[in-house]
Structure formats: structure tokens, C-alpha cells
Image (cartoon, rainbow, N blue to C red; front, top):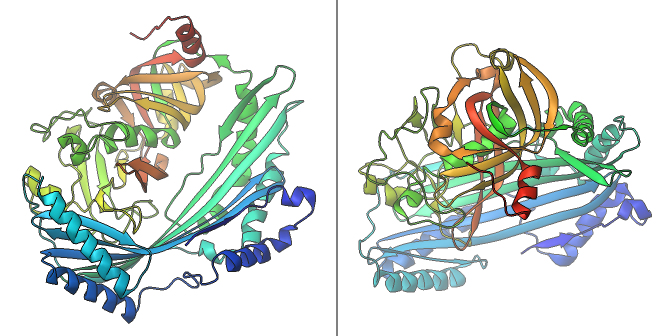
Length: 545
């Protein structure tokens, strides 16, 4: 079940007032989905538990050696605004169950949105047929790592439930911020502010034939705002996104975020980009702010250390991994400053959960210690492939309609235990560039070569941050880049970035994930001027070395 409504230009035309947003949303919901399943969202009761038990017993009667049932409700709401106008509301709900079986040593999976015994038994039968068919081509039977059966509950710790904040109040919040941004002095240039405030709740009941019964509720919030400034005289424009990034928190996250200061700063920096100095291509020491570095970590560490990519089982969405399948343990990944943790227990992070979709408890473990690779991301079916006795707990599905597979935990660069502020690092940098915020990126099919750009960049000259630069991009090879990590900030510089919709697989699934990091410096990196590079490319001239 899902529904969607748009109020395009409603406030501008005066046809619908801000005060009527909630009434309109309620009326539309009743018209499109009169039997709404999510009011209120509550954990499954005895009916759902009995249903799951019945379906597991049915799967075993059909010859399954393993079965798990996931009942999942997903609720997603967003409010969008452009300058002083609310441009849209969306309100989507999905409820159904996914059933996974093992028969003849092979997975079979099917899902249904009809949550009842009759539909469930048909879905079990479908999953059994799929497993039997798949088993004819499976060379090696599944060998799941053991997991202890548990009865457990877990819920994202939040202070303020975002779904209890009215549409009107959420919209008013965005409009108030836009009014502040519009007061930034920009001369004759024109400012456009666009925002999206999305709230997501995932409720899940997991039951397995091994005896686990787990209920979980995850809440996430994803605010975004872009400031775009146009110079009518020159016909040019520039944008700067606010550095607010999605987190696993309640509405308190956007209320506590320093929007009031940053929205003016974003408008002014977008304006400054129009006249910034073009970067001179060459080699620089890069000081990367956490609002930028998290994406580099995601692409150059998070995905390459997924075991399915290393083994070649996964090649969608940017390919496999450069890491050797037989010599990964102890692989030299970077400098001794490089300590990377995988952590599904981290407070406020997007991939934080109590248990994965195999029923394995969330864990925190080192992936890289002092530059050496010491662990990989695994699920129950993958753990024994690399000689480990237990899973790392990385099995996850986007929703009830797809099969769980190996998904990334929160993967983060650890801060320096010794005092090291941003000022300390800048003072120690002679010729460099300071980059904040993430923008475009590209990476090759083994995640070996990459290129990244940021939202804003500043020259560092003789230990001081100088003028703004434009058209800055850096590129390199993953291991060589991390080899040149030579300074890491302390806990006071640590921030949590992340993405709500990280794509992987075929059919594609998207999942949320966070990456924490402090400010960090990478010496002697190659930087290009993107505008110059683009012009040269049109002439057939490439100046990469």
C-alpha cells in the first residue's frame, strides 16, 4: 500500500494555506488508503507471532531445513520547500512479509504484501520451488555459521518522534530557515533555497526455525538543503549544500543542528564560488573535513571490504574489489594512522540496529588496524568461506520484498587519541587545499582508482587558510592515497556522515549507512581543475598522468 500527494505551489497561489497541510494529508490518506496499517505503528502481537510460527512449520513440512519469516512495515514521509513555498508532501507506507527457506542446501525466497495464513503458505511454497530450482545449479551447499537463538527487542533511542511532529510544523521549520537564508547579503545576485525533510521508520519482526524471535524499530531522519546563487549579469550560477547529513535520530536532530548559522553561510559561500580563484593543477597536501571524507571512506574502504565483492559474487554498482581473495589478511591498506572500525552499534548512525536479518547481534570490530586489513564484512553463509566461526552480522534487506544479502555496517575512521585540532593540522601544512562537503565522485570497477570533488575548497598557504578555490577535484589510487594519510584529528573534530540510499545488487537494493571520521590530511595528492579538464576533454586532450 502506498500513496503520494503533491501540493505544487499551494502556498504561492493561496489555494491551500500552511494551516491546512495536515488536514489535506489526512484526507488524501483516507481516500487512497482507507485501511491504513500504520496508525499507530506497534510491535507485532500474538497474531503475527502465531502466523510466523505457522509458516515456519509449513516450510519444514515441505522439506525446508531452515526458514525465516520477516514481517516489515516501512513508513516514509517528506516535506519539500523552495524559497517561501511548500512544493510537496509525500507519505508512503509499505507492509508485507518476506519468507526465506533452505532446501537441498540452497536459498529460496519469496515475498507477499498479503499478510495472512493463506497468502503466507502460498509464498512458502513459492520459496520452496525456487530453492529446488536453484539447487540444480548450486555447486556447494550452504553452510551457515551458527547463531544463538534469542527473543529480543530493539528500538532506535530518540528524544522526539518525527512522525508526531505535524506536517505543518515540519513545513514551517523549513520556511523559517529559508527566511533566514534569504537575509544573506548577496548584492544583485539571486538566491534560491530548496529543501527536503524526510523521516523514515522501519519496523521488523523476525522469526526463524532456529528459535529466534526478534522485534526491532529503526527511526531515521534525512534533512537536506541547497543554496543556489545566480549572477544574472554573467548568466552563471553556483550551489552549496548544507552539511547536515542523515542520521538515525529523531526530530531533535534537525532542531539541534546549527541551521540558523549555516544557511546564511551556505548562501554566502555559493555566492563566493562565482568569483573564486580557479585552482592550479598540481600536487597538494589535502586537508579533508569529515563532511567530505565520509564519502571517500564509503567508496574506497566500505565497499572494497565487502566479502561478496572480493569473491566476485557481487559486481553491480561499481564492480568487485581490488583486494586479493587469498591474501587479504594483513594486506597493507594505508599508513599507520589508519584505524577503521565497523560498528552497527554506533549511536546515531544509519546502519545501527540490534540484530541483522540473519538474527545475528550487532557488532563492533576493527577492519583495519594501523594500516593493515584484519577483518572483512560477512554474513552467516559467508563466514566459513574465510575460515571464521561466526558471522560479522552484515545481512540486511531493503524491505520485505527482497532477500537479505551482505550490506555494509557503519564504517568509520577512528580519531587520534592524542590532541590534534583542525588548527593544529592547518598550521602544520605548507601548500595545501582544505575541502568541505561532498559533491561528485567516480570510481573504477575494482574501486582502485577514484576521483572526488567537494562543496567548497580553500587554499592553505604557510599554515593558514586563504582564499576560496573553484573547480577542485583530486584523484588517485586507493592504497597510495591511504598510504599518504599523515595527520588525523582528535575526537573534537569527529563527525558522522552517511547516505540513506546506498545502492547495491541486482535487482538493486538501497540501504542506509553512516561513516564517521575526524578531519584528516593526505600529503602530496594529485589535483586537477575540472573546468579546464572538461575543456581539454572536448578538444581530445587528456592531462592525467
